[in-house]
Length: 606
Ligand code: F6R
Image (cartoon, rainbow, N blue to C red; front, side, top):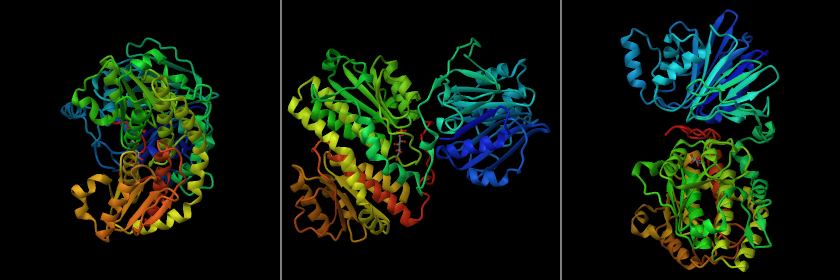
């Protein structure tokens, strides 16, 4: 959600910044801007629209070896040229790019106006440029510290000042910032995606930390200016992981990567000797595990739906009461934090502000929270007391796919581990290990059916409104299916428990409202088929995500068969065709699949 890039070195800054912006565009894409310190002074080019619109506006040669850039997802103020970052002070000598939200911006804007400052945007961020310019501190670092002392809220910022042409000053509080250490050059970014092309040596800033960055050195320090002596770490990422390759969309690339990604999350974690899962990062011993008497899973959006699937797995295999709740609601209801409850934060990006705040709420009240997180070193991963990395690899499409599959697998591993410390038999443990081993190939089998699924998606794309229904294990699959569909096709897709249809929503069923039903071949098959009959009787078109050989009676239904695994693991496979339905519906409708309207990857504001 918004992307920051900064450069100071020996190359021309503008092309490096533009390249970084293109890599960060998935974080926000309603406006973009670049500011560099040229020999003639500070130059800024910014515009509403995409990075490609910005690129078209940039002069062919833009001198200057230090600069900052930003791609925006609007919070305060519409997506206009004026609201795009960088923002500057009245003299145009100070430039700031900012991610996050300043809660006291309205008061600060009023104060600046009273002092005679002419504000040029509607943003909260602009105040920072004016506050820095008006500081009487003797160094840029001091001026930034002074400005930050006046603001409340969250920020990742990068600051350029014409009076200090050799450096950038950056700061972080609740919004990620990373330094990339190069050879006689330094990069700054809010996301590794913008750095890995140039370096694998990085420094993650912590909340409250600042850095002063020149071409050859960096210093990190705290709010009291005392040095924090950060050392670079090596990141294990390849620039190619962020490339589209031959694919038309990141979403399809990431869907197709799932067999390999799934293999990665289970690799080295299946323990045949004790018929369990080995999770080194959990940091909870067997005695502590036995003492857990409840599990609460916290995540947002699709991560919450997978959390619901995870809660089901933990109850079923671990026989521990488990529930999932949207992290975005959690801290606002003053939750009771229990000593014997295990809290699990689940997040692809590890930067979702709502989930991070929920983690902090648990910790503040003395609870134990572990993370199921994809991005190594991310804020949530670092805040948790241990956890399970998901190893899905970088996910660029806004609509999450492979990371969610690996989340579900992460929960299966966790549930198996909890179960085997408690009452799950070795026979069941071995059965699930075998199921987990089969899963990557079975995902590949579903993907081979893409063309048939695409044909169904084309029909669904015609409907203005549709239902996704599932029961018990199938309900989170339905919720995620509806989420993916609405997110990128902009069709109204609503998820219901199959059993709830007759309590109200059946009134909406008609020949123009199709239903996608999750119908595993399990103990609830008969009941599910009964519901399909009720829908068919009202003329509702039906698609069933089901298993080969599942007897759906004489109901007129378009079947999408996926390979059968173990009943507990089937929901993971049943989700895969729902991803393809959403993708191909959006493709049919001609939407911008990787950058759906109004959304952005990684919601770093509350
Ligand atoms: C949907 C989607 C979102 C995210 C949610 C949480 O496709 O991607 O609903 O699941 O914003 O994001 P993370 O997992 O990064 O915390």
